[in-house]
Image (cartoon, rainbow, N blue to C red; front, side, top):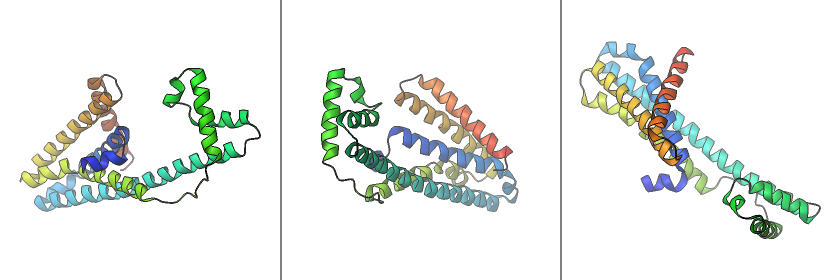
Amino acid sequence: MRAFVRSYLDPGDRLGEVLFGLIMVLTITLTTELALEDGRAGARELMIAAIGCNVAWGVIDGGMYVMGAMLERARRARAILAVQSAPDEAAALAVVEASLEGTLVSLQPEEERRRVYRQVREMALGAAPAPTRIEREDLLGGLACLLLVLLSVVPVVLPFVLIRNPWVALRVSNGLLVALLFVTGYEWGRHANTNRWLAGLVYMAVGLLLVGVAIALGG
């Protein structure tokens, strides 16, 4: 499953899904403590609420991924049409340059960049933009989002399964979730080439702040 998720989501997307999944779970567990007054029955209700919340969020986020993928293909199609409808070569090259801004092409010397721009223009002139529709890869990417959000609920479920005292299980669950917020930030720092420990602390602090906002707003 790890290879499957990596095939469709880059590190930023993967960490983002885990982060929001953890925040959703932590929000549920911090706002439903009263359910534990019913003992094991209340703990079961809490688990069901947490799982249901993350299933809903995973479906929504998966849908957003599908729409985002479609919009990205539509953006490329619009760029191709803009090149084809440009009044002259200079205008077409300007469209290509704007489309490739921020990519590795911009790191090349100017002469080499111009050569690449001309090559892309020639390819765009011969391309036929297809209508934007949902593709198989979009659905698989959305499924990867759903799986990551669902996996983030595991830390809140296991303590309630393994520990009989629901209050102890709740504290262990919350502690695990806070620790995972730090780990998520640490991994983000590794991919972002920045201070990993500081990134972990910032992720943990921001995650707890977002939970606090959600609770204050009645979430």
